[in-house]
Every structure is written in C-alpha cells, then in structure tokens.
Image (cartoon, rainbow, N blue to C red):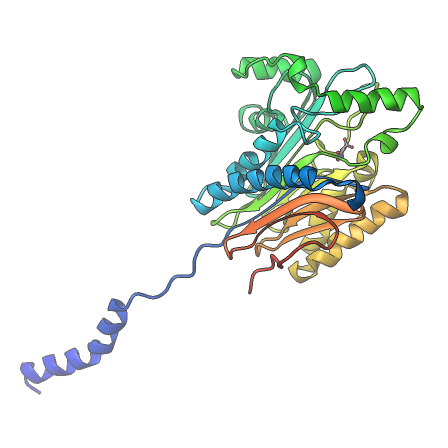
Length: 344
Ligand code: ASP
C-alpha cells in the first residue's frame, strides 16, 4: 500500500469516530431536590379558613422558592437549606425566629441546628434570645468554631464576636403565642394542649453535586421551663445529614424524638438497608415514636434525590420541589398532587 492508500484507509476508519466526537451527547440535567416543613400537628380542616390556608401556603411557597433558586443556580445544599429556613424564621406564622412560642417566664428562647452531609460537620445553638436568625448562628458555630453545640449567653457572646446584630427580644414576640401561654397557665393545660401544631421549621436538600444537607429551627414548646431544650437543635434527634444515607429534619414532641434519636436512626437504617426502602424506614421510625407516646413528623431526602415525608399527626405544613418539576405545598395528610420520586 502506498501512502495515499494508507491515508484513505485511516480516514475511512476514523470517520465514524470523528462523527461521534462532533455530535454533542445529550447530558442529563443535573438533578437537585428540596423538602421543607413548617411543623406538624393535630390540624383540623374544619378550623382552617381559606384565608388562613392561603397565608400558610404562600409562606411555604416563599420558603420553597428561596431554596429552589439556590439549587437551580447550582448552589450548595447547605446554602439552599439556609435560604429556605430564613423566610420561615422571619415569618410570625411559624414557631421559629419571629413568632416563636413563649417560655413559662414569657421569653422566647430559640434553638437551631444544621448539618452538612459531605463531611458531617454540624452546628447547633439552644436557648438564644437575641439572634434574629438562629439557623445562621448554628452554621457559624459549624464553620467558625471547633464546637458543635453552644447554648444561652455563651452562644450569644459567640454571635456578637462574629458580628451578628443583637436583636431586641421583643422582635420575636407575637400576640397569638402569648395568648397560648396565658391559656396554658389559666387552664392548667400542657404544651400539647395549646400547641396543637408544632410550628418548628426545617429544610433538607440535595444539590446538583449530589451533596445532602439538613437544618431545623424552633422556639421549642409553649411554657417550656428550667432551660428545657427539645430535639430541634440536637444533631441526631431533630437534624441529621450524611451523603451516604439521607438528610432529615424533624418536628414534633421533642422529648420523644430525642429518646428515639429519630434523624440519626432513619439515616443509620437507610445506610444499612439501602435506599429503596426509605419511605418504609421513615414510617417505621415514626411508628416507634408513636409507640412511646410521641407525635410529629419528618422530611427527608435520599442520595438519589427522593424527597419524602412521614408524619403521624393529621397534618404537617410541608413542601417539596425537584429539578424534575415537582413543586407542591401541602398541609393535611394525603394532599400531595405528585410524587417527588425521580425516575432512576
Ligand atoms: N420539636 C420541637 C421541640 O420539641 C417542637 C416543634 O416541633 O415545634 O422543641
């Protein structure tokens, strides 16, 4: 074969490869997923006026939109979780930040925690009274200290040292929550009687890199005293994230969630059993809470981006959004219009 023939043979052999290289391969859209909650509880559809419902749905949608914007732009799950929680902390409709429940001593004491599934770094604060957005302080504990959990005045000093503004305690107070405390005291009721709805807020996310994160923020339970702290700021109880398993945020009767170690229990079982059973695992851990006498709910995201809920109350303020176009908010049980399970 002379050189010209050789060249021709080479060209013909390479031709399909060149054609292949030129034809752009359709890349799958990077997937992301987000779920939020604004508390679970004994919610009675008859008590919910259309106006009230619209108010809650708008607040949930605003939180969902804030988180979604971060994820759709390629932001991290950690950023999305904080973006979704901030508007709920700022809204008096939820028991977190502004609108937090009152303690027995008529103060508002705030708890929050956040966890990054990439490296399981975590930050948490409890009993803070002067930090507008406790979720941001929890994250600062994670990033700017060698600790995981700070409480009370120590956490507040840390906040000031990191440049957080001191918010006047009156900012958090709302008339409706004060009435609940007064009713509790006057009628000798328990927190469960007056807090028919746990208004804790939380978010879990998977970003386009496949990283998971979870965050939770609360005012706790009405009439709490003696420095009572619930599950929300406890890593493993109210919040947990691990890229190998899931991201969970809880709401409910905190004492039971602590005793079951709900968020870590769900993630640990998922890590052992594998992902397809995620809903059954979450339901089984919530059944365990119920068997002890507790109630509430969880939101979770799996490493495949499944956004799930499980609750043993009549309702849970919740929402989820995914890159596949799921976008829904719901309040009572069984209201979901679409499944947020992506096609595998
Ligand atoms: N879990 C919270 C607590 O026990 C209350 C809530 O979910 O609203 O402090």
